[in-house]
Length: 199
Image (cartoon, rainbow, N blue to C red; front, side, top):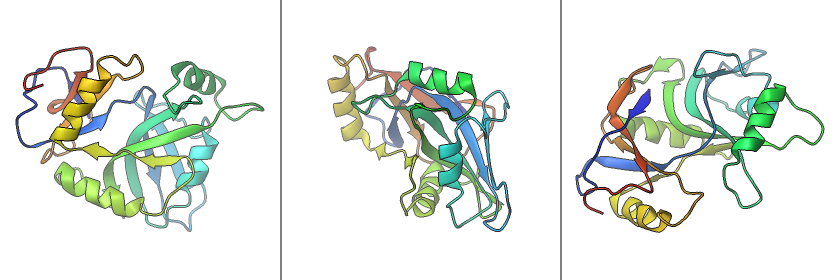
């Protein structure tokens, strides 16, 4: 599912917000714990990225519930915890682990399948609750994406106008279903440098 670019009024009820991340969008599919090769990573264009980021695969292999499908972004972080696009490009270009490689973290923001059941038709709020339970036990290199309510989001956008490393937020309609491959008006990218109604 992809985000649309359109104006929204930040005073409107019904949205939740996430920080926009600069990285490689990945779907992660896990199988039951008893099966070997139980984790697969796939890029937006369908490329198999399983071998690219073995630290993410090893972490996701620790999930005790499956099969499931997660949606998220793979990032390399700098020493201040910010997304480092060049660092990620180097890891992706070399297609695997190598001496001196910087670790990749998988920031997960949505759940498409839980315990073998398709949950894309559930509201976003319910999918996030499921995701929170699934990732309730911390996993190395796998980070659930925090979501913000309206007042927090407005404060972040105000502060972020003067921060070069803050790209903005993603606004998501709380009751939206997940529509694979669709650029939906229910997900909206908010640029930190643009003006927004209600801010």
